[in-house]
Length: 273
Figure 1 (cartoon, rainbow, N blue to C red):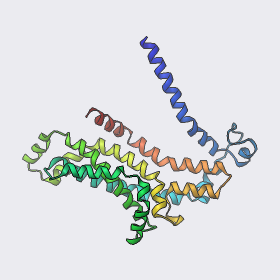
Figure 2: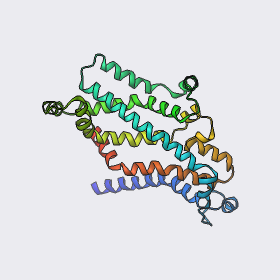
Figure 3: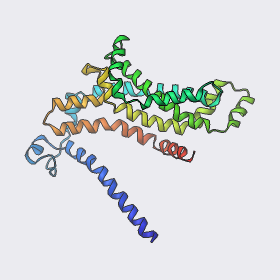
Figure 4: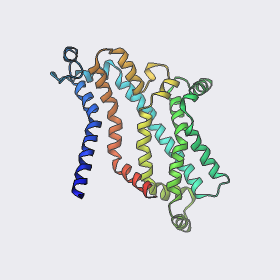
């Protein structure tokens, strides 16, 4: 009976995996087909050609290179600033008796419950008033501001559950607050930081809503809005659009594979706690 259940479980997981991988493989295959092949036989037909020129078109003619650079210029500083500020805030709220710290946490978390659609116009107007509109700094500020509350809430839970004796031992050894934070708390919360880093990088890198809210010039657009422009430039060239999609997915996949071990251990640690 147990073998039957195990076999049924693995069969179901294989089918679900194929269901998820099917569209991904379809996009990859379509990106290597020629325009004449797709035009003659349709996008859903079996491939009868193979070419990598579609990636060159998406990379150079479609502006994917510039868009990827913009995305990295936004995602990397946003992740670093968000996690750095969130770690400091979580350390203070979890290890010191700050008046109203529960209220502060709830307010920070409540800000993430607001639908972003109702904040589009205020954020755009505020960026205009501050002179940051249509700059990458505006997008970085938005990403940091809207992610800080959630990251602080998660890291606060990890730091709060760490044994207090560790901090007491470091204090007895003469460590100051800054040393306790950098040499004790941060290394112990590395799995949580890695998990949040991978998630936040994916969210920020793939963001579309805030990018089209605070940016206007094509040269400043990150990769997701650039895919919309690519669709407008190559209206019927689905192979080039598919190639651009594959290119845009490479950085996030690479980040996840790099931090996969920390990501899984961070989720497991959070589940135990």
